[in-house]
Amino acid sequence: MVYGAIEAGGTKFVCSVANPDTFDIMDSVTIPTTTPPETMKEVFAFFDQFSLRSIGIGSFGPIDVNTSSDTYGYITSTPKPNWGNYPLRQDVAERYNVPVAWTTDVNAAAYGEYHKGSGKGLNSCLYLTVGTGVGGGAIIDGRILEGHGHPEMGHIMVQKHPDDKYEGACPYHSNCLEGLAAGPAIEARYGAKAQTLADKEEVWRLEAHYLAQALVSYTLVLRPERIILGGGVMQQPHLLPLIHEEFKTFMGGYVPTDDLESYIVTPGLEGRSGIVGCLLLAKEAEAESH
Ligand code: ADP
Ligand code: ZN
Image (tube, rainbow, N blue to C red; front, side, top):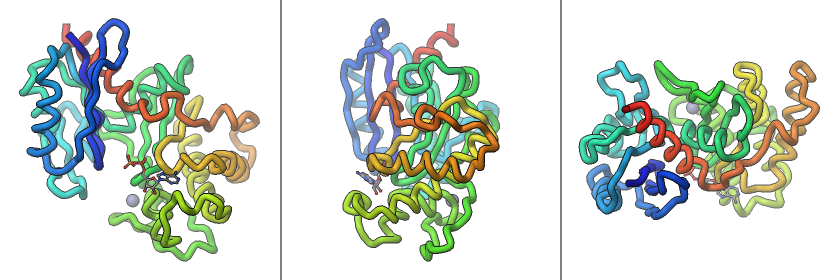
């Protein structure tokens, strides 16, 4: 018997199974996110090989996490073609008839980091990914912050830098945080792949300008003990120190920020935060079902 985990991303699904005692990952597969019938056929082909105790799903969104809603367990209004109004959790639960935990990809990553990564030993932390989009999840006193819905930390408003002429890429808000700071925004603003802009200081200073504003807002609203930054854009090693610098300026000393190097950090489970979180949630779903 194993725990199953599905990290359902907009580009790929990562499916893993883990030993229920050691939590070691025994097998994994990566499947492209195409259409629900195509992708799920491969997801099921993978999990059909195992005897499952429970499954944890961390999904791209928006998703319905409200247990009293008719569409609980659905991917809802995603702009991603084919996946709008798709009952992902139900499809998995019906196939395997085991407890299924259901949350967002970033909540799962926050949960993994909280228990086994950079948030270990704390009572709260916030995880933000800066990649194709921007999204975040928070753990407060061991619980994922969600209920009526889930946070949408990527779509908060930030003040435009006076020199930034780029209008923003978000289809809903143009110049929200995601619209100005996700990987595609960097690439549209400068007309080049983000990876190739590594030595252009102004690119990362502007990026830090936007991300730091958001981190100040999250800090003021939630007061997490630590903020963990993941995702492709954070692969730029010089970005984090710039974020520390800008954060200090924007915070203006209002909330004490003397040890920013240990307040705003990188993931401890690089690349595995989401899957580890899903496995932990699978274990909890099993325990709750008894
Ligand atoms: P996803 O968000 O789809 O799960 P990623 O977190 O890898 O995937 O994000 C992909 C985005 O991150 C791309 O849009 C790209 O612009 C950016 N990115 C990937 N690698 C790097 C890098 N080394 N430096 C800067 N940006 C990067
Ligand atoms: Zn937006």
